[in-house]
Amino acid sequence: MASRSLATSVGGLALRSPLIAASGTVGSVWEWAEVADVRPYGAAVAKSVAPEAWQGRPAPRLAPTTTGMLNAVGIQNPGITNWVDAMEPRIPKLRVPVWGSAVAGVADGFALVAEGLVSAGVTAVEVNLSCPNLEDGEMFSFTADRSRDVITAVSEAVDVPVGAKLSPNTPDIVGVAGACRDAGAAFVVLTNTAFGFGLSVSDRRPLLSGGVGGYSGPGLKPLSLRCVYEVAREFPDLGIVGCGGISTGADVVEYLIAGASAVELGTVHLAEPKAGIRITKELVELMARLGAESVVDLVGTVETW
Ligand SMILES: Cc1cc2nc3c(=O)[nH]c(=O)nc-3n(C[C@H](O)[C@H](O)[C@H](O)COP(=O)(O)O)c2cc1C
Image 1 (tube, rainbow, N blue to C red):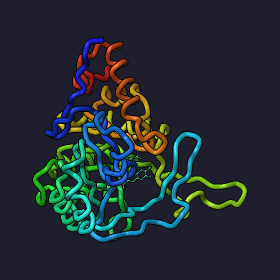
Image 2 (image 1 turned 180 degrees about the vertical axis):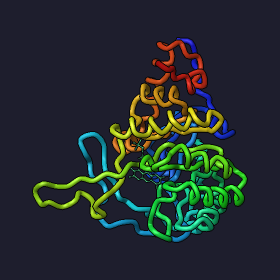
Image 3 (image 1 turned 90 degrees about the horizontal axis):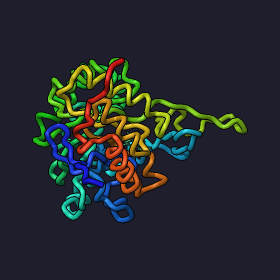
């Protein structure tokens, strides 16, 4: 089989592969790197970090569903100061570029975290806008103004590419993506988990202690893919990382054709930490069948009826 180029780039960042490990599903990267082969990945995103430490929500906070899973882990994290102390010596030894992920309740908090992430050696900062703001508890990514404020603050604070990670529940995903782009985001990550709920018939309790949680896994793919398709059509110059329900090489190709230049793998890692090896093989085989020499040849090639 002729060699196929997996190299791609997003938001000005060169990646050796379009596969990226998604935040929250590979710990702080180094734990996962001890059991998985990181070579098939272009980057790996560490669990989101906040200005202060947080224990996360009480158990149960993970629950399987027939087509994926629900989680309400909350942003369990050690706080940015402890995170930097732990990660700074580790990041240069990892054989994969590490991206950081910032969360906070206010725009300045995101900027503070982003500065810490960069000081520890991350090559990009994902801004997790799928978290509640302090004022009224609504997700930042639900409004263009709030998203713009956060991305502006982070872009002014750091000199690495900044990505905005949006919720699929965002009412106007195209408008919010555009606001993030105008505020300095080099790329958007589409998407985070969708709101989901499950219950147990026997005790009539929600499956998660937090009640409503985040739904991820195969059933999320059409929702996230819709976001990629619509944002790519409106902003062909904006870097897009697709994320949601990817577990096969064919899933990756769908996201590329819809307009993503790279993709993140999340839930698949929980059952299969080494999924990147299998998915790369499937991706290369499918590229051969499609006659695609390079990943970039596929990006945004969706046809109209
Ligand atoms: C257990 C768990 C924890 C997660 N934690 C985070 C997080 O800290 N920050 C974040 O941006 N996304 C987090 N996510 C969302 C994933 O990064 C990803 O966007 C989502 O799961 C959709 O992709 P998937 O269907 O491939 O899992 C988490 C997902 C899961 C399942």
